[in-house]
Amino acid sequence: MREFIFLGLNSIGIIAIISFFMGAVITLQTAYNTENPIYPKYLIGLGCRDSIILEFSSTVSALILAGKVGSNIASEIGTMRVTEQIDALEIMGVNSASYLILPKLVATLIFNPFLTLMSIIIGIFGGWTAGTFLGVITSEDFIYGIQYAFIPFYITYSLIKMVFFAFIITSVSAFQGYYVDGGSLEVGRASTKAVVFSSVLILLFNVILTQLLLS
Image (cartoon, rainbow, N blue to C red; front, top):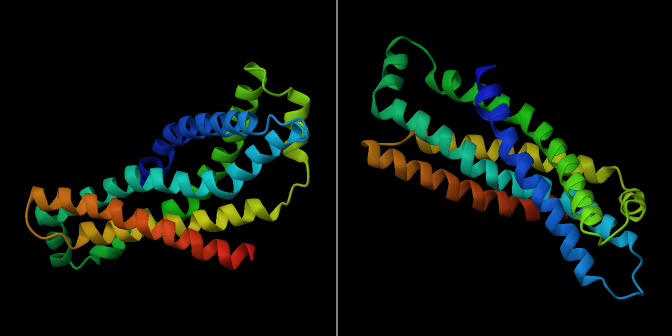
């Protein structure tokens, strides 16, 4: 439960803010790039919905979490390593990797998909807010675009991606922290490497999972 709060609930704020403005920007950019009268207005809502569900709410949120949660995990476990707290656990006969890493892994695997669903809802709401308040689309057209030709599997696809991304963020960050060697400088470097490696793997698996799930 501590990890749920530390890694999950504490991330709600930043994900909500980013998702809202992301939805708003996608709506405005789609509106300004489809001003041709040939294009029906509801395409703005449709573009906002599909962009957020397919890519932004899973991949961009995961990259944000890699920076926030990943660096947190790496620095926490790395500090425990350099201050010999992990060695103390080993001497007491505790499986330190299981004791320290498994709760974080379980918490992120369970909670991150909820963050994705929240991001989708807030992102689409942000798009609707920006579109209607700035007068680029009517509320009726936007809602029709959200509903138009909706494919429920897209939600499943986004959640599957986030489960993989959650595993990557936690495992890579924990590995970097667990095997840090040296002092506080090395902990900082391990935290940086955790974010960089997690981000690269997230982008790589984004391509792989898209090919596997949507082809």
